[in-house]
Image (cartoon, rainbow, N blue to C red; front, side, top):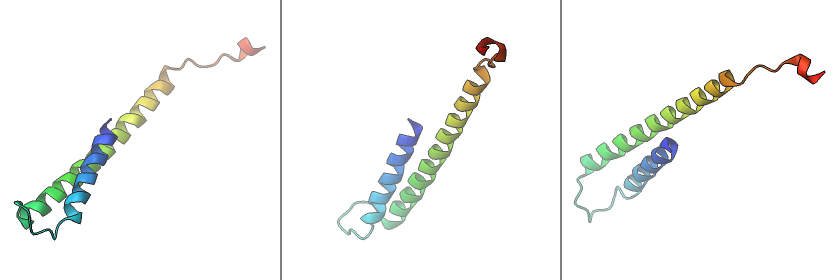
Amino acid sequence: MFGIVGGYLVYLAYELFRDRNELDTSMSTPARFAFIALFVLSGAALFVYAFLIWKRALQEEKEKKPPEDDSSMK
């Protein structure tokens, strides 16, 4: 879920960057670039956080799995 939100924030930053030369807007150029930077940094942070959660969940699942008993297969 965090990865989806991070992707959406990066998409919003792209939309702002794509329309940066649009003159018919109420947002000033410095504010536009500040929000682009904010959205890109927040999106990247959410991607990293989602990856760390995913890796931690895989590690916990691996630790919970009982070790296989070789004698049960004989």
